[in-house]
Image (cartoon, rainbow, N blue to C red; front, side, top):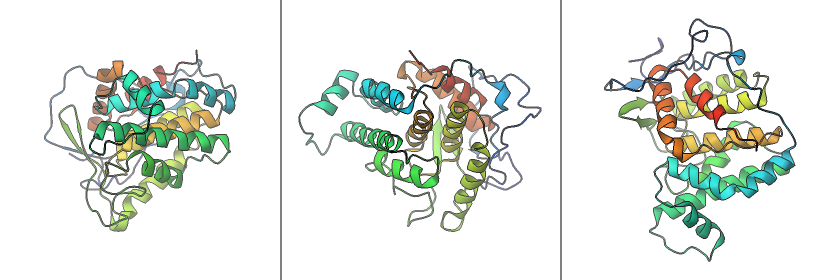
Length: 284
């Protein structure tokens, strides 16, 4: 089941961009019950128009304030990001791991995942602090190299750019989703990324730009693993670089989060995912 005329996994168009369409004029709905197709292949991604979203609660302050606030809830962000990935550590255990004595259990996968998320978070914070954070493939690769070092087949570059081949398949509440084909040495993924980013950076509101990027990057499965974590950290870097607080996606809302992902993967419709993520913004 391909949503474009580009053949299985090719993602001929990549994105629809921000603009009024018949689809984006309707209210996005996320079904509570899903019929499970055997497989769905990536196609166009509809993220609606900028006027579709209520952004009135997003008031920028300063990057330094946003970073300071993230530092105060850094453990909570890392705990929730890890929990969304099925990590078993509790928040007090995450606190102990990040602030306690040195970690030396080479077999503790959950702990290593949390430490990698910590590295990725610190990388984003430092780049926002020194003014070098950019919404680019190079920055994304650096973040991915930090967060997925223990998990992905290859880190720090797109699928197909190294020696590994294939990948891009993800399970979303029973749905088998196949990301775009890599193309020769990752050429197809680079094209999709460059074309999508060109449109995303034209989104005027930084918060919507950041969250749309997270949806776009998660949908296209640019890496072998760690796509959602990388995309959320990139989102938060863009938010903080423009004076907005980082968004913590709470694990207590995992069902709603998973449903919005499932809807995006099955229908190529990012609007419920974007709306859900925007609703997690808490400036207090």
